[in-house]
Image (cartoon, rainbow, N blue to C red; front, side, top):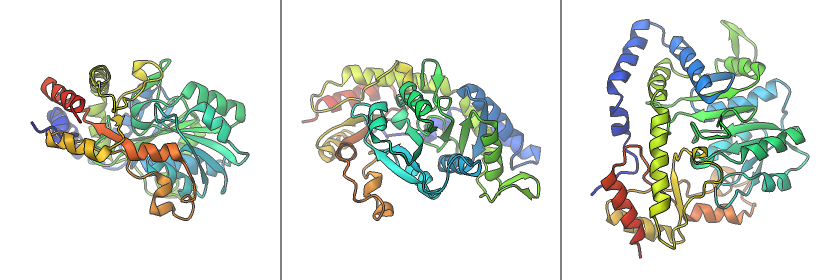
Length: 369
């Protein structure tokens, strides 16, 4: 049996007829940049998230960068301000901070959920911290009720990195509607994945939405008039059309991921395999990744590979050990983060995983010596 980690071709093949219709609609419109498809997707995604505003961007990193840049342009942040961020996040979260000439303050995560916790965050805060970047890693919401309360009490801006958490929710509030702003990635492998790069920002503040709309388009708020200096970070019209198709299937796909994850957590019984923990309700996690921890990762992956099961590591190197931050962050000692990056393994959790595949994976994990 051969079980790929994620078969994007098969996932997208389900929607082939709808994709072709969407592509034809864009081609026939004669309008290919910032047209009706982008506007429609922004409206539909904002409604689905439960956010007043959505601005499509070229990718998830751009959404993060533009959110922080927008706050700088509005006078809410300035060069040198610090942004608290979980230490075990993907490097994109850190890049967004440093790209804006802000300082990342790396905070150790909760050991069970891999996410930022309010208690450790509160203990790490310094007077220089003006914003918190809460990352919903692997598809589970960080402790947003407590983090949002802390940010309100301390007067801190709250930005969600929701790149892996489309549809995750607590108390009926979805990822993207908890913070002052949120960034989403629609990279093809995400739960809501485009057929290329794409992203979006959601936010509560109309002024921030207006600023980011200008920033993504050379800083132009009106044709040939440039309010600020900005990049070209626009959501492509074709990708917006494809995303509108997949958004209609998002709740069903997330439900399938949740069902698979629930069974993994019930049926994997290996004493050396630490299973992920769900802190809040089951719908607080949409399982972009099903991540376990094992002390001997290489041997574990090799055994599963021998059974035809492809696994992945998200992520092998923590940001503070990356060469890109050798000068700025290499001196940090973050033992929990470093242990997580040494031990995590992602098991297949595609919404197309069938019963035979699931049983084979569970048996193989339970039988690893």
